[in-house]
Length: 348
Image (cartoon, rainbow, N blue to C red):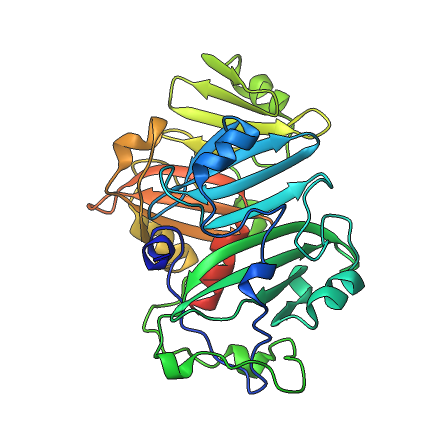
C-alpha cells in the first residue's frame, strides 16, 4: 500500500532527534485495535459500526469521524473515501490492541506487552511506541495514562512519515531502553527548518464570551438565551446561534461543552480579541506559531483558503482562523487535540 499520500493528508511530516539507544520498533502487525489497523478500509468501519455520530475537519486534508459501539466511543481519521490512517479509543473497555491492552490496563501490563516506550512523557501522562519502518513510513502507538500514570485511559495509533534521510532513521534498540528526554535534549534543534509551532497560552484565555470546554451546556443558554437551532445526536449536542456562535457538547454527567466558536464580531476572548481583528495583534501578545492550511466544512466551509493558528493550554487549545489579509475570520476554543499537540511539539 502506498501510504505516503495518507501521511501527507492526515499527519504533518516529522524530523526527530534520534536517541543514542534507538527505538524498539515493534512489529506493524502488532499495532491494531480490535483488528482495525492503518490502511483498514473506511467502508468496513461503516459496515461494522454504522454511520458516524460526528465528523470534524482534520487539516490539511481529511476528517476525524466519531463512532459509538456499545459503551465505547472511538474516532478514525480518513479522507472518507480511502483507508484510515489513524484511530483513537477514549471510552469503554470493548476495544483492545492485539496484545490485549485497553482502557483500564495497567502501565505494567503495557510494558509487559511492548517493553519500555520509545517516548516516556510521564509528566504529560502519555507514552509512545513506534513501529518498524517501511521506507519513510512508520506507525505510532500512543497510550494515554491517568494522572498517576498507573492505568490506560486512551489508545491511539497514527500513520506518520519520516522526512529525513533514510540513513538517519531510528535504529532498533540494542540494549538500554530510551529515557524520558532531558531538558538539554529537548533544546537540540531538529534538522527541519519548520519554526516553533507549540506556544502555550494562559489558561485564563481559553474561553469565548465566558463559555469554555468543561462547562455545562446549560450555561450557554443561561448567558445567551435559547439557540436558533439545536442538533441532538445522542452522545453529542450542538447549540447554533444563527451560524454566528456555536457551542458543541458531549454527554458526560449531562452535556458538557467540548468546543465553542465565534464567527462574528462582538464575541471576545478575555484579552479582547474577536473576529475582524488583525491576527498580528495576537502574535504580538502571545507569540507566533506555525500555521497550517485550513479546509472547513459546514459553517466553516466559507473559510476555505484561510490558515489555522493553534495555541495550547493544558487540556484545551485556542484556534484562530485567519485569511490572507491577516484578518481573524473565526476563533475556536476546544478540547485538546492530542495528536495535533504531539506533532506540533516535535517540530520545536
